[in-house]
Length: 180
Image (cartoon, rainbow, N blue to C red):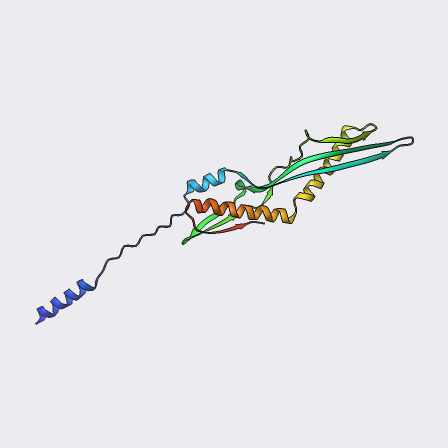
């Protein structure tokens, strides 16, 4: 009788056991992939062309000198990946979290001096006078182009570009934030 009970118990244990194999198909970004994204360096996400008319007048005793110049420039807004903080990308489960550096002006030398034209000139002007006009054009271009709306557009473009790139690498769930 004891043998029959033991046989039933073993039979039930064998038939109720099962083996399950589960695979995790999510693969995080490899260190090589992260490094190659960082190595790209500066990513441009918005380019804004501007032209500014700057003029000045100098009144003398017998004459009035006038100078008007047109300055052309292209301001490029984007992200410098070399400013990314350690751990800027991490994976939790099936979601990839990305924190990008802030959108900034990528090149401070945005005025195209070769295209600068004197629109009107009378009298004698020094290199220092022209430098002062250049600085006024520089400040005005930055004020007109580095607006919150343009920065927001560049941030939106950055998020979309990174999302597309990461989806191309097989990452479907991506959360992207940009530092301020």
